[in-house]
Every structure is written in structure tokens, then in C-alpha cells.
Image 1: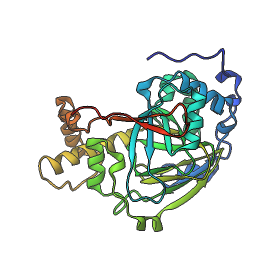
Image 2: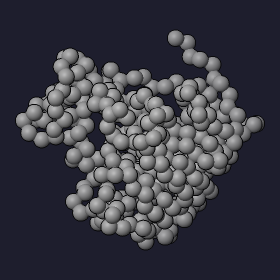
Image 3: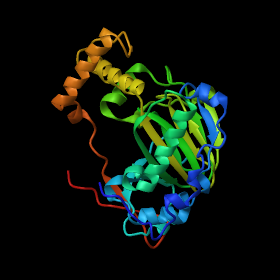
Image 4: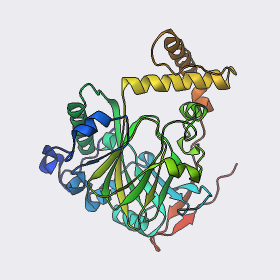
Amino acid sequence: MALIDRSLTVTSYKESPMSQAIFTGWKPEHTAGWAAQPLRITHRLSADPLFSLTTLAGLIDEYPRQHYSLVEMGPQGSNRRLWREGDIGGLSGAQVIDAISRGRMWLNLRNVSAVDKRYREVLDQIFEEVRANVPGYETYNRTSGILISSPNAQVYYHMDLPGQSLWQLHGRKRVYVYPPNAPFLTPEQLEKIALYEVEVDVPYDPAYDANAQVFEIGPGEMLHWPLNAPHRVENLDCLNVSMTTEYWTENIRRAQMVNVANGLLREKMKLAPRSRATSGAGFWAKAALQAGVRRSGLLKKARKAKRPIEFTLDKTDLGRVIDLPKAAE
């Protein structure tokens, strides 16, 4: 994949303050609780020119279409899950950010660390610091994305398969993190997510909030939570910019293999899995089962189709969207 090179128009990584540590408030309790409990840690990314609105507008100007998602969602408090995908049309990056600030949507610049090498260097430094602070915590397949979202926008209750952190850069948001076990997330739900990649389809009950840990985070704060912990996000009344980081470890990889194999046993063979062990003879049998199904291509065919593009941003009335004609069946 070609990398975007805008070194003549934006501050380069080497010229930024990123030669300093990214984490600014790492404490012994963060080392002890990493990956075991939700953690809030301070960082300096929000002050780096690489994450300024001006630089991000330039990034949007040249961002490959296949690597972004523009999503319109319902208002906070709505029981109806509105989720429509759109296109930025011919707007400039600055206009896109302005439109988002006036609307109810979010733009996800997916896998920015692969598209632009400057963000890859930031991502690599983050995980070098994690490894230094949590000895033995080895990660791979790291990715990052940048989320630009409207005032009072929301991200619905969902969970993620890899390890994940949320880095706040501009604005403020409220994050609800729930325990990664029943009733908030059942083994059956986790298995379906692993099989079909439908993270936002996890059922949500407002009564769950009594058991959530709630964090209000602003620029210079990040959150990291246990693997598969369900969460949802509410923006406060301001434009928000965040970065997400995702990664895998050997333990996470093995847990995913078990989720897929258990899902196959439950759905295809009508057998109730009795173990989630990630070692031993039973694990290796499940590893072989899911590997064989992946190679066959059957699992890929079962996944849901890509969402259609239903709207584009209005050039003459920023913040408004224009519905596109539905494609013929």
C-alpha cells in the first residue's frame, strides 16, 4: 500500500515533540491492572501538531476512499439504532470537519497507521512504551484509526475482538465500560461476533448501566479496558477527535480461535461447548477445526455484506446530508 507523503505541508514526526514519552502519567497501578481492568492514563498526543485539526484536514483531503467510513447515527437516548454509511463527496478536509461539527455523524479514518507512516511511528512508540511498562506484554498486528465525531454523537453498545484503547485528542466524551461476561456479553454472542464480525449487534439493556464503569475523558487522556469488554460512548456538546489503537497478543489470538471453534460447534454441529481453555489437547483440536473452516472459505461467505452508501455530505449546507438513490435489487 502506498504511503501518503505530505512532509512539505505538515509537521513531520521527527520535528514533533514525540521524541518524548507518549504516556505522561503511567503509575505502578497501571502496570498491575493492564488488560485486567479499565484504566485511564494521561498522554501528550493531543498537543502534537500531527493531531491538530489543520493536519487532520490535510489528511482527509488525500485519504483513500476504501479506508474511511462516514456514519450517521441516531440521537442520544434513542432506542432506534440508526446507522447509515455515507460519502464525503467533493468536500475539502476542513469542510468535512466543519460539517461533522454541525451534524450527527462520525468519520472513521481506518488503519491510518498503514496509510501514513507518521502515524505508524506513533503507534509503534506507544506499544514500545507499553512493553517497557508491562514486561512481557508482546503485541503484533497493531493498527490505529482516527475518529472525528459530532457534538452529542454516540457509538452504540458493542465490543471488539482485538485489544483496544481509546485516545482522546479534542473535545470530551463519556465512556461506559461493562464487564466482559454475562449478561453483558454471553459466550453465544461472543462466538457469533467472532464468526460473523457484527460487533454492534450485541443486545443492550439500559439496566446494564448500573454495572458500568463510567469515565468522562478529555484531551490528553486515554482509556484501556479488558479484552472483549462491551462499551458505548456519548460525546458531550462539542466536536470530538479520538484515536483508537487495536492489537493482538498470543493469548488474544488463541481466545479468538476458541471463539470461532466454539461458534462452529454450537451453530453448525449443535454441540454446546464446555470449555474456553486456550491450551491443552482440547484447544489444539479446536485450533485445527477453525483453521480448516477458514481455509475452506465457508466462514468468509457467511459474513454479512458490506453496508451500502446511502448519503453524501451537502456542499451548500454543511452539516446536512443528501440521501442517495437506492441501488436496484
